[in-house]
Image (cartoon, rainbow, N blue to C red; front, side, top):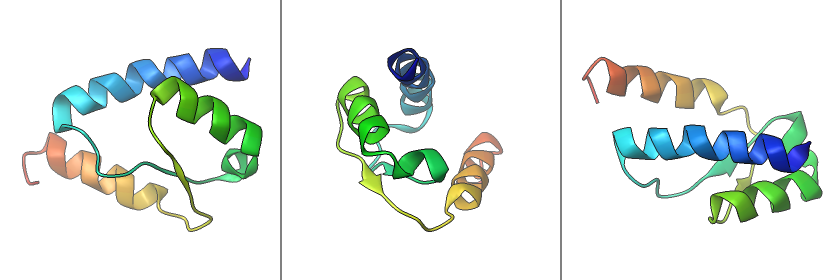
Length: 73
Protein backbone atom coordinates (compact mmCIF):
# COMPACT_ATOMS: atom_id res chain seq x y z
CA UNK A 1 0.00 0.00 0.00
CA UNK A 2 2.80 2.42 0.87
CA UNK A 3 4.65 1.75 -2.37
CA UNK A 4 1.49 2.19 -4.45
CA UNK A 5 0.76 5.46 -2.69
CA UNK A 6 4.34 6.61 -3.29
CA UNK A 7 3.99 5.97 -7.04
CA UNK A 8 0.73 7.97 -7.08
CA UNK A 9 2.58 10.81 -5.33
CA UNK A 10 5.33 10.51 -7.95
CA UNK A 11 2.83 11.10 -10.77
CA UNK A 12 1.59 14.27 -9.07
CA UNK A 13 5.14 15.35 -8.24
CA UNK A 14 6.23 14.99 -11.87
CA UNK A 15 3.33 17.21 -12.97
CA UNK A 16 4.22 19.89 -10.43
CA UNK A 17 7.88 19.79 -11.50
CA UNK A 18 6.71 20.30 -15.09
CA UNK A 19 4.84 23.43 -14.03
CA UNK A 20 7.36 24.93 -11.63
CA UNK A 21 10.75 23.33 -12.32
CA UNK A 22 12.95 21.25 -10.02
CA UNK A 23 12.61 22.00 -6.33
CA UNK A 24 15.66 23.02 -4.33
CA UNK A 25 14.57 20.68 -1.55
CA UNK A 26 11.70 18.42 -0.58
CA UNK A 27 10.37 18.61 2.94
CA UNK A 28 8.00 16.03 4.33
CA UNK A 29 5.71 16.95 7.22
CA UNK A 30 2.66 15.61 8.97
CA UNK A 31 1.96 12.50 11.00
CA UNK A 32 2.87 10.10 8.19
CA UNK A 33 6.26 11.76 7.87
CA UNK A 34 7.16 10.43 11.31
CA UNK A 35 7.51 6.95 9.81
CA UNK A 36 11.10 6.21 8.73
CA UNK A 37 9.77 3.44 6.48
CA UNK A 38 7.39 5.81 4.64
CA UNK A 39 10.16 8.40 4.23
CA UNK A 40 12.51 5.75 2.80
CA UNK A 41 9.92 4.42 0.34
CA UNK A 42 8.89 7.89 -0.83
CA UNK A 43 12.49 9.10 -1.22
CA UNK A 44 13.28 6.00 -3.27
CA UNK A 45 10.29 6.39 -5.57
CA UNK A 46 10.88 10.14 -6.01
CA UNK A 47 14.62 9.48 -6.50
CA UNK A 48 15.40 12.51 -4.35
CA UNK A 49 16.43 13.10 -0.75
CA UNK A 50 13.67 14.17 1.62
CA UNK A 51 13.97 16.40 4.66
CA UNK A 52 11.74 15.59 7.60
CA UNK A 53 10.24 18.52 9.46
CA UNK A 54 7.75 18.62 12.29
CA UNK A 55 6.99 22.26 11.48
CA UNK A 56 3.61 22.87 9.89
CA UNK A 57 4.67 24.16 6.49
CA UNK A 58 1.79 22.72 4.46
CA UNK A 59 -0.02 26.06 4.37
CA UNK A 60 3.03 27.81 2.97
CA UNK A 61 3.29 25.25 0.17
CA UNK A 62 -0.38 25.66 -0.70
CA UNK A 63 0.05 29.43 -0.81
CA UNK A 64 3.03 29.13 -3.15
CA UNK A 65 1.08 26.81 -5.50
CA UNK A 66 -1.76 29.34 -5.54
CA UNK A 67 0.60 32.23 -6.28
CA UNK A 68 2.14 30.28 -9.19
CA UNK A 69 -1.31 29.35 -10.52
CA UNK A 70 -2.38 33.00 -10.42
CA UNK A 71 0.83 34.17 -12.09
CA UNK A 72 1.89 36.19 -9.05
CA UNK A 73 5.03 34.14 -8.34
